[in-house]
Image (cartoon, each protein chain N blue to C red):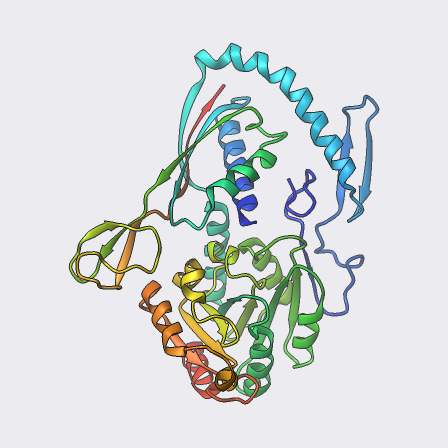
Length: 296
Length: 113
């Protein structure tokens, strides 16, 4: 089942470079082909995004009714001589496997890959814009942008001169390893570079999905509550770095930066912090030094 | 919302294992979900209702075992049950702890026919 519209297709997302449209983009996977054989006359039709809910519901209900009558009998019949399979499989195994492949690919090419996660509006894209502008003479940057909709972030990154692809997840709330695998191939990332993967703005869902990144960076801004780390602990627990952005606004907001750090360290005592203002440039040098040091 | 992805992964695993076993369908699936796995059980159950339709799990009974999360204190080595990720060791008040169980997201077994 597709996460976007609930139809029978899976993995509905698109990967585009700025300027590409959905129609001319070969990587857009959202073309549906349904065979409706339940009404007797089989017909196949291709359509994209024009799926109506009524259709969907009819289809599901229909199948459900069919299955119900059908299954019930078999179920009773076979129950006594069924077999048990010991599976013991991690539910996220498929994602984790692709993530490890990504990790191997990045390591072989000496690509330092960073998965940036945060709530919407913390300044992820602005941080990338400024970092790329300030360091692009020393470091070669590539960017994978993740959002539910629009090419806006990719267009902003493209203006900095860094190669970028935009993943639109549709209704999906996080990037997964398969999306990054496809996007990295499309981006044709060169050896010895830094790859920023800007995840969908969401502090919950992306925490469970390893993308194969070298480091995970969680960003919060001082306009959010200082208790963000304990409200959304899983994300802080799975991150390596915490960037606290918009520190130029500290005099105007009730954000206790030491308290925020203390909360975050309760959850993850290995977390390393950078306090920055992307707007004024304050604190950015520490972040740049870290980036250059780890890039090798 | 990510519970739908989790539910769909469960269906994929069941589908694969059922094929491997040359079975037709599953009448029971057993899952183990840790209390600190990042998955909300109610949301997962809701997502599964949709995800199993038209799949080998269509009529399967879904058994979910919750695994209570436990942590080990890195200071006094005390092992204790946790309800969140930010509480200190009840023995010595140390925050440096390590989760030793409760992150599970596992398809344990399938009963097929």
